[in-house]
Every structure is written in structure tokens, then in C-alpha cells.
Length: 188
Length: 357
Image (spheres, each protein chain N blue to C red):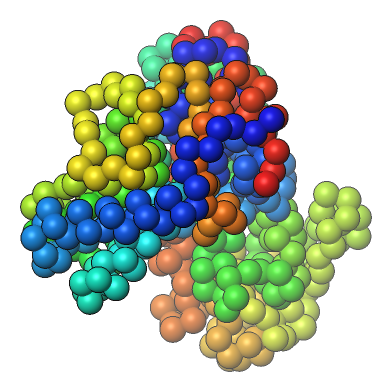
């Protein structure tokens, strides 16, 4: 059985456009502003934000991809090493305002790892955070500056973000996570 | 997979369905090709084409780290990596040490010549001692073929074979494959003619490369004086792994003709029994890789050597330093490959007793 849909493709599109305006508004322009997506689904979302900003601000923002694998705090607890997707930051982050982009904000550990990874590349003036979904249950003192949708969840639930560039469609669903739930989800 | 609920807790990572963590969503995306399932890396013969590809892709991300101003990530923080070398080595030992340090592991170097081995301590005792002193990954070089397999039976962590006798040198084979893939047009060795030239008999590099290069689909030619090819004709006839053929010849001109890459091997004087070669001069005259001979290969053919080189014997100095040479790239790529191997093995399956979480 499939989960409950909490964002449709249309809602995702509107959220991306709204966040793109918020980012520019908060930064008061686009000077020294860069977008960095967290592998994997943060990367296409960051590209879409850049595209939206290009349309309404006529400014082309640099977009990078950040792989946080080596900075995870649970590497020794995983049964198998995660596949590394690679980092590609084709610009110097020093002196820029970096907007980290990810699909889901949950415990905050990914963002902690992302900030550690980013700082290895230079000293940004500021780091901000934009996420498509904030599902709560933070374990670290981290919050998002820009949120597509706040979704109250329980820890047993699984928030599943699907992005067209990777999954062939745009959607956000919530599944009950029992052990077999992940298996039971049909391939759409 | 993992059943401990404590490990299933950080569901946030489940949103990255490409990752093979404990929370991969089956069906959401195809599983990444070639997941790592080996606890030790003793030879490349056990690696499938998919697993070779996984090592190559992981090494490419390590190369990105090496290009940073500070080439260091915290991935193996707190991991004890012990280099146990019973044979002389510069590049392999230093390469493993640099790789482990780049991943923030704690590195201990043991040279057997300066250890209790000289007081008669057995290999197994040495390994138990190092394990008790915190080694979780043991990088081992030994003059006796098979010694790392014995070590792997005793050691509770992972063993990496850094060269055993004439037998195997898996990280060298992996870095050679990586170097070929990064330099060959199209990024693949499939269908490419790769020549392994020289003292094949004593070469663990040649033996490991035969496994990985044929698995990756290369057209492998092994060439040298007949005395240094003993046994390889029979192996070529049955094929590597029972199926994958390679060509054995003493005809240097035929081997080099239209080659895409030539890997010269060191004449291993320390292992050479008398009577195999009349003299080094004669070897250099008949089988040395010179500029003139290299002209038979493709114009942009790659020149490789696992090092250390006897310049003027198996390879002419102007060829070793020439524009086609990727020998220094091999050394640099060795660090990326060893980082990849250390990283992958750190996530390898452990004996139950060691899984404490």
C-alpha cells in the first residue's frame, strides 16, 4: 500500500518558487549568493531554486553539490559503507553566503555533517538552510531558514521525497515505517 | 541486514534512496551496482566487474578529496590502521600511510626488521599482539606467498594484502586499472590491448593485474623471455578464472604492435634464481622498453611501471620520463585507491563478537 501524499508536484513547484523569493529577499539581492545541494535530492532542488531565481531576478547563481558521506557521525554503526556520490563545488565558498539545500530536515545530523564538509572548502560569510520538508524531531540545535512545508510526523513514519530528475516524478509521501513497509511500497 | 532498532533510528538518511545504508528503500531506485561485501582484500580475483567499478568510483571521489587544499576527511576517525611490512617498501607503505591519514585513521607502522620478529616471534603472535594494541585494519606485506591469508584467519579485523611473495598485490592492480581508465579515451579498458612486459615470473603485480584487467575486458598480452614466463602459457590456455583468455609470447614486436598501454615490470634481482637470465645487459638489449620499440605501439600508448624502476634495464630513462609515461600518476592514484579500499573495508561485515553496537 502506498503512503499518504503530503505534497503534490504542483505544491512542490510552488514551494520552490516561494523559497526562491525568500532566499533573495533575506539576502537582499543575489550578490555573493551560492546554492549548495546535499547529495542526492538536494542537488536537483538547488538547481530548480537557481532556475527560479534566474527567471525573476535575472541573476545566475552558482550551484554546487555536496557529499556528506565522510562526515556522517554514524559511519561505524552502518552495516555497509554508503556509496559516495562526490562533491562538486565549482567556486570558492570563502566570502559567499551559502544556502544549503536538502529535501528533508529531520534529526539535523545531515546538516551538521554538511556544515563540517562545507567549512573544509573555505569560510563562508554565512550558511543558511533551505529544505523542502521539515518533519521535526531535531537531535541537534539546527533550524531551517526556508521551509517548503512543515509536516508533523512520528519517528516511526518515513518521509519519502521523489524528485523528477532522480525518481521520474515529483511527490512527497509519508509511509508508516514498520520493517516491511519499505518493501511494500510499489514502484511507481 | 541490520535488525538492531538503534541502527534504524536516523530515518533521515532513508530519504537518500541511492545509499546502501541499513535504510535503503528497495524499489524506490535500483540498488547501486556492486555493493561491497568483502571483509579482507587479499587479491583482486574475488572482485566482480561491478565491484571493481565500485572501487573505481569510490577512488574518483577520493581523488576529489586529494585535490582539496586540506586533503583530509573524518571518515575513519578512531580507526587503527597498522602497516606490517616484512619486506622493504617505500611507495606502498607511504601510500597506505598517507591514505589512512587522509581519512583521519590512526596509523601505526611496523617494520618487521625492527620488531620482535627478529627475536623469533611468530607471524600469528605478532598479529594477535597488534590486534590487542588496537589494529582494526592490518596492511601487510610478506615475502611468503599466502601469508596474508594466514593472517586473515587469525586477525579479527580486516586484512589488506600489500604484496605477498610472487603471488598478489591487489591495490597495485586496482591503481593500475584506475590509471588506465582515467587516461584511456572513453574511460574503459574494455577491448584495449594492454601489454605486461618483463619479469612476469616473479611478479605479484602481473598476477593480480591479470585478474583485474581481464575482468574489466582488456586484451591482455604477457611478454618476456621464455624463462620468465614459465607456467603462464598453461594459465593462458585455461584462462583466468577458467574463462578469460590472455596471450603469452616472447615475441616483443608482436606484443607491442598497436598496444594501448605497456606496463614494464621490474627485473627482481633479489628473487632471481641463477640461470634464468644470461645477464641484465642481454635482457635490456632484447626486452628493454626503448623509444624505438615503443613506436610499434599506438602513438599515444600509455607507459606504466609499478616501481621501483631499474632504468636502463627494463625501461629506458627517456621512456620512463617521456610524454607517454603515466608512472607518477600511478603513484598519485595509489593514494586514492588505497583510501577507497580502506573506506570500503571499514564498512565490511565483521565477526559477530566485534559488532557491539
